[in-house]
Image (tube, rainbow, N blue to C red):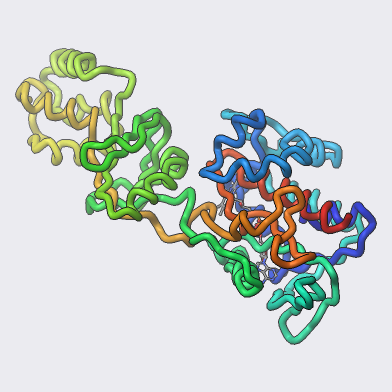
Length: 398
Ligand SMILES: Cc1cc2nc3c(=O)[nH]c(=O)nc-3n(C[C@H](O)[C@H](O)[C@H](O)COP(=O)(O)OP(=O)(O)OC[C@H]3O[C@@H](n4cnc5c(N)ncnc54)[C@H](O)[C@@H]3O)c2cc1C
């Protein structure tokens, strides 16, 4: 959409083709329906949030970065707000308003919108684009094509990888596709009972054998098969790489990262002494989310019907150890379909970063998630799509 808007604004005849009956299906889902369209951090901090390859975007960001994107929407009557960790959202809290603004601008720039139209092939003569084939033998003659068909996850939104197939067919290298920002699967069967539980301000430490992979504090969400939430999604690309190397990966959860083992032991002792006559499950309510109490009694092998003053010192220590390092074994990631973003895609070696044009076929441009660039949550992926789209639109038009 951004590529078409920019090309249209330069007085070119532009046709936007999408196989869906409406535009921006994935955009509507983004940011839990609120669309975290960019991040207000400075360029260097921004680039650090890309899993690799961030440097490739420098030219696109120089041309059209977060301030320009924010101005684009605000100048068209959609105010924005900056939330925690500099995430930018529309004040409407609705991704609908982002899609509506883009649609209005497409019309203003006289872009012809062709919905329910699937691109099936490109016509190339002497290494130069000559036209686009659509389903049912429809053909659009043209000398420029911008492919912006997305990754391969959440395929019901339209991103099914056909554009990547076209790129491959025309001689471009496709870097292996892997899930990015994806939930992790845990071996422990009991995990299912915790579905829906959120733990805030916990430390999650991933390791393999004796090696620590990464450790960070944040929010964790339990699902029917494992763990998710912002912290896990952010760390998932790294973990996926370790799992791909056939390493046995575990996650240790520290439920009280603000307290040392000694401080937590003292807190336990105090609680157990003050509430000596109360049942242990009752006392644990001040130390653990209710949903975890039965499970922790089982893991620590403590009779849940005991009174606080019947709990032995050893049992208390076992509980403290569990709270400071509850181990889950990671058996894999969820499939690529469930990744919020696709890692891999059209190789950057085949794309000119100053124009987004293919280095192999003249008149063919790439932008958005289909290129081999992906980032953390926080608005970075959409900014990359908008910026590369803007640059591709401008270069193709000029
Ligand atoms: C649940 C979810 C939440 C997200 N939230 C955020 C967020 O808050 N912030 C953020 O920065 N990123 C977020 N992302 C990532 C972000 O949405 C994507 O990176 C972004 O949408 C990529 O844009 P794109 O235009 O490259 O591809 P897409 O948005 O996938 O669009 C590709 C389009 O191409 C069309 N298409 C595909 N093949 C063909 C064909 N053969 N012919 C015609 N049309 C075709 C599709 O129908 C689709 O409309 C989220 C992703 C998901 C799944």
